[in-house]
Length: 159
Image (cartoon, rainbow, N blue to C red; front, side):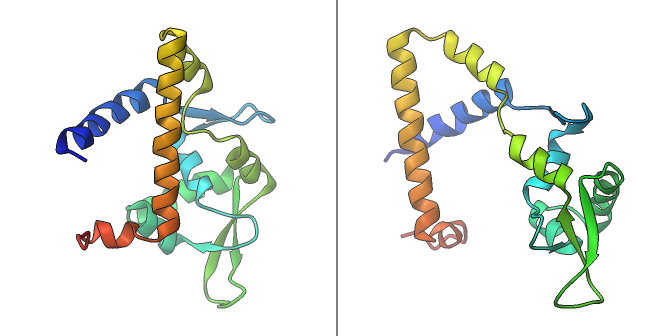
């Protein structure tokens, strides 16, 4: 694979993402609006397995105090709850409420209507080719994740 091929993906993917990504998520049941960032935090939580605020902040690349502000808003909105850890009673875990689970289920990175509009700009042959290319890239990405090689590659240990 050439450097030019890598540069093509690096150039094209952000164009697709910025044209089609969801900026807000509307709760279908309450009609409340959450930012894409708030919805992405809910994506990292579970209704059964708890996650500490510090773990979540580290994973999302923000400080604990920044994460705490967002978690407070999500808790006030009824999307998550803080509960005592089952393993360590001193620790508070974050868990999704039914409303948070609902948002997580309906959350999509891309806005379907915008994706549809982009696809509609292509003729049928180009649309099929573009979709096949995306399927191939997605399959290769899934293979990379399944291989467990991502951390090694990111640490610069790639052969």
